[in-house]
Length: 396
Ligand SMILES: [Zn+2]
Image 1 (tube, rainbow, N blue to C red):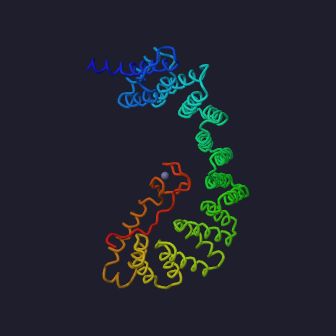
Image 2: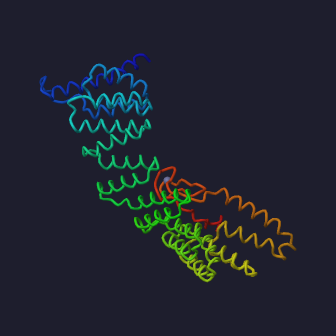
Image 3: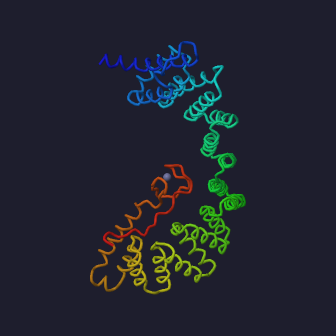
């Protein structure tokens, strides 16, 4: 045990000395050797590997080496990064700050150390200091894309949307890649905040800004629909909801009810029926059959055939639950004593539907019950959509 510990502790010391000798020979202070014992990048890799087995001992060993040879920047960086990984932020910051303060660092190394320091501040939650270091990297022309993206994330986490938009635009400029869909999401966030503050005009301005940035922004059209509906401008609201559905048919569950409400207000039932007919054509959802059946029932007609048709074409829990609900009220079914089993089955189905996630992230698969416009799991924007509820029945 002691033997192996001794070997283990001495290993990095040996590596570091070997490497230090190699450095000196390169500088011409001692006769050149044919080959370095170890390259600095190999040293980092080896130490990381050792640290993954036992970070405590790796740090103890590294600290000893660092005390012996203060000139090795890479060694100190590795040590600082290990402290950060362990969450010992005071020590990580102290090491990286001391490194950065060293005179004579070349520009590349200085930028590397500054980058590590910026991540230390991020991890420690000192966001303004992290931003400052990333800004300095951008000014110095190092890690520009990465730094601008980190600045954007800092403002995003602080819900400072205007600054996040400014950072996204700088990122566009630096990388030549459109961030307009993201900027539209930030504008939608501001629209939501304005709505919570009951500032409808500001909400409208932000929604229009979102649409100007990204004409395919489903979220902005859903918001526009809700705002117009709130202002009792039902035709405009219906138009916005329809646009959201045209942009992404997966949002049918989110627009089918609002469109029904708007058609009631404008008296344009034909328009709604046409929407349902179109939705049956272009989406794979069974919801249009359920909606048509409800309309028939409202008009005093028997919806059972329409639901049976839906079950045949788009079998789903939603359409089956609706079918059972209508079936259990049929006089023949009641007479045969089958209404109670049908009701039990319907209740079980509804419970199952209530416990099933309604949304899913197309990037990471996270499945929440409610809509999030930024995935809480993978942090991607606009990747969570309603799950197509037309789930196949077992055996169908
Ligand atoms: Zn996700």
